[in-house]
Length: 535
Ligand code: N01
Image (cartoon, rainbow, N blue to C red; front, top):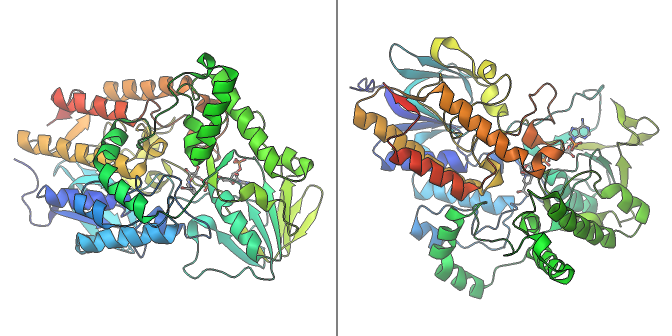
């Protein structure tokens, strides 16, 4: 006997209508469940709705970073470039929403404020900021890994009289930089993508860099008709390989470890990895993330490439990362980033040498200079992975808040459930491979698995399903142990939460790969959902 006998009780409430939430709506409907999705944005698309800064594009190839659940959709949609731009991805998402009539189950412009588990009724009560309350047996949180912008608390930040922009909350109408003095703060993926285009338009561009990053050229190109024909032919095999892979795309590492290669073979493999482009360079050797010597080969190769692009060796010295394994912070993918620093209208401020002291009405002040600006662009990242959930007043059994349970870092079983929070399911959450894999494929696989768990509860006539605390602790320890053997823990990054003051410093993602992760999830499902308690 389930609690869903009241007419006004939804089977599933989905929070967020990005790639993950939209698929959750579609798949839940296909499973015969009554579903509603609440989305804060005025349109669907999640990260691709908000991050509309110039140069925004995906660093996973379009043909992989797209839904695989419907063969007709897969074959009908034509991606114009190897790496799609934000407008093209958003057009795709809107097409999917229309094609599968998803909007009738999505309330836009609706931000969730609270979600509380009602133990007596075995339902979630979810309230929006407008105080509408929705009741659901299950909640699927598709709230995004990188959806809460990090707004640095620099003294005087509110005093600036020019224009302030955040890459993560870019205005609908593209601002004009023509004739203006623009400052960009932040040199992660968002800064690295937007800086080349802002530089082309602005009178002067000053880049304020706290930590340099490794970036590999995208080698983006238009997809030809021949490409399109081949893609369609190869799609089933491409998807099959991707599901079994570490990162959710069909590429495999060089068949030998870096140590087993001759120097010539190593250089050839690295050159091939570099020419493949973007984040894939970070996976040239199978041991590049686990063996620092292998990582050093790739890092030194990348540093030589970067140095060869930049005209002024002094500027290159500042732009090349130091004391940072390659990929420990996410490798960026660029189109002309380092070349931009050869332009006469672009200058670099190294904040390690002259930190920002304050922001004034006229611009940015560092320890040793003043920079007058008309526009400041903050490309300062996100409160990643846990930020969106922490902003909801999310309370499980006995009114316990998720922030309190996660005070020392996120505790999950398989990244999908949290003890004490029955019937609450996370997609792309902490404890899963998440952003280390192709997020679209990851979301499809995880949503299908979650719907299997819900079906298992319903088949048993159970009102609630949650993991035991001991299995969640064991899984979380395994996530930590897996990461401890990688280069990820050797530098500060948003993966570790170290970009946000006061956030517990813990590597939050499962590093053994998507294929391995899904096979563990499948084994657990086949073992009658070992570790989950159905009541
Ligand atoms: O954010 P980031 P992002 N003063 O955190 C600096 C995905 N993504 O939005 O490193 C001065 O990487 C900060 O410096 P530091 C992708 O997964 C994908 O760029 O903390 N500087 C850093 O340089 C990516 O990894 C795509 O020392 C400050 C920058 O701001 C993730 O999103 C495109 C500062 C933030 O970099 C995040 O990328 C875009 C301060 N007070 C994003 N605070 C693609 O698909 C922060 N910084 C290609």
